[in-house]
Image (cartoon, rainbow over all chains, first blue to last red; front, side, top):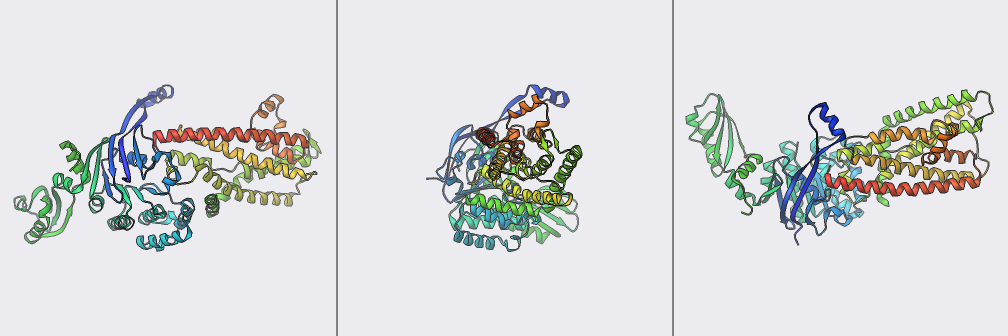
Length: 329
Length: 264
């Protein structure tokens, strides 16, 4: 049985509309106009137990709405979903004890008191036996390097520390399924990496199923062999990350700062020049050639600084969208 | 059950952690309490009785009112409204815990702290100005009063919970809760016993659950009603409690349904 089974899931929101200005506000006091907005349309997919899947799409594409349906916060308008064998929106405690939803910009921690109090509270809420609690908390503190954050009021923690504490609170009951909505949002590069390592470790150690949304291509490329791409509520792509990247992001971006001006024509030998403004330039280089080209650039030009970047997710999605995208790879 | 006890204990810590906010709350309440106390003290002057209340009964009414305000009218309606309109409530809906039970445990912790503080305030006032205290003559009065107070505390909790749940529909707004709180203080008999009001208004108020929150419990304590009448009042209060419980459950279930349909 798959961990998640989604069939023809759709969600339509009804939103009220107001004409601009005071007159509009007055009108809407008496007669409110409603408009229906399809947030998710006819989405179907399966996720196997232990799989790590990335869920991509632009803002408002329907990712969070889908996660909310899978976690039982939202009723779908039509369609069905089975998560760990349960219908999520019935919110059965037996189901709730087996999964966690972490939203990067929301917190379940108590703000005024130390995180360990929320951990204790979750121990009671999830009815975790004392021995298991001790073992899990020790492991989490170790993995997430939480030693210093446990006894400080949550509001005094840095964003990165808070996110780690958030993850610990969500994982204390050792869920079989993790739904992560933007787990690295707002974190610095080092902290992002730690959070990713942790997610990977958790997935491997406990065969946990993970479905995560992110704007951050690194999250996806380091964690998720398989991705789902959603655009305007429709599932555009379901398949291996590798094939999407090779097809729609065949280049990486090289940004270089030089100690003096460099002639564009010379740079063209390295890769396609997107921009050359005085001492800094941006080049597009084929993905498989990146290291050779970087070496060449460094040896031939007076490079002061060099960064190599992935094509942003939005850009990949945009290209896929323009190409019309189809399921399966 | 254990989980709710734990919520109670963690919430107690939280209330104590926010000492400044607790202190402000108490000082604010204390100002109103003292004003009302000295107002009645002046009105009574040297009179022994007023509107059917003996001097001790009237001043005890005010003292008891301070205790009941702390124990009955302490709730977290505004936080509830806030959690609903900001969507923070989601994080509870995802966990295996009943939100009503969770809120009740939080409330109980707050009520405990406020009650302790109110008892101290009253004790200090009695000691300082030698306020006359009416002590019940019949032993069973204490029991009847405790039962009435417990029920009134639950009625307030449910009413506030119900009114706050309207935030599911009136997104971003605590309007209903605001009106409710304003009206409640008056209708429950917090500022003065409702039997000083004109007969018509009084009769109308008696048809509502509000006098059962403060006015009737204190009347039971002051033994202004007979044993039989007290039992009758408790029975009616019980009926109100049951009716409000059912109504609250209905509103809450509807609210959750609309939340699940429209999302937060």
